[in-house]
Length: 392
Ligand SMILES: Cc1ncc(COP(=O)(O)O)c(C=O)c1O
Image (cartoon, rainbow, N blue to C red):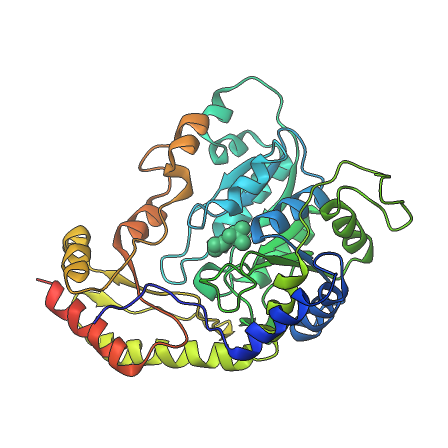
């Protein structure tokens, strides 16, 4: 049996929705974008949604709205997809990493509070939170501007203490909810708990638009700013060739928006199918020696299953397990590789192994298994059996 790593859940209705757009002259800047934004805002209970060309583009615009400028600091997690830190670099800011909670795999709120306290006050102790090359450099640093928690693998970060820290120090909270559509934290939807939240719709996500993302905020001025920035800096009153500010082409096209609308109309079904697949995995792997299944925090009312990631006991050789799985037609991934150990982060900021021990030990042990909504019980059984056989 060959099992894919991930697979979008596409229907005839999805195809018909995209096809219908192709029979109109409106392939961009048309009515589907507005409908998609309206329905998305309603789904996550937020006043404003702004569709963009990717999650990365959305994060970049959120960082601009937070007024991050040269040398400014943004506290975030090293255990994420690289885009959640790169977006700070796009504005010449400095991502300040703090380590994670070993159970939820999200940023540790106590460490985040300690770092924010030191960095906001400019105390000498603040230096210890900075990347090694920044610590050593004499050039002036900017201000601490924002906190950027990531809802890793679809589980919300502990937003209560994070938002309290932001309030105490006057910081913006940017939620990277790219993996967490539909997740709920203490009864509220992930992405709507901070000042601005960003979702992503790449084909491996819970719902897809091909490429695409969505920014949500309750601030009307920021929603207007995002609409201008995504559209080459045009303001609503600008003519087509007038540009009030430096902008980007981060627009989502009408075909993507039509697909997004169709997928969003059955989002509960898409999430429920993934939850069922995760439950099958949990049942079969819960008692397997050497394997730990994902843990939910007490504050997580609802996990939005993006990937299914187990952790292997430290004595198990993960590379060997992956090879054996692959020989049985089962792909797997070591998910995530820490951001601070990516080659250009090492080079630019002087990071090395040992800087974030919890992140590094988690990253050495994780194994993402094939996971998608259409996965059948037999496929889950096959993967679990292959994993059992692959562990010595
Ligand atoms: C946590 C996280 N942040 C940001 C992104 C970037 O989204 P996109 O690929 O749509 O640019 C992703 C997507 O994989 C992600 O998982």
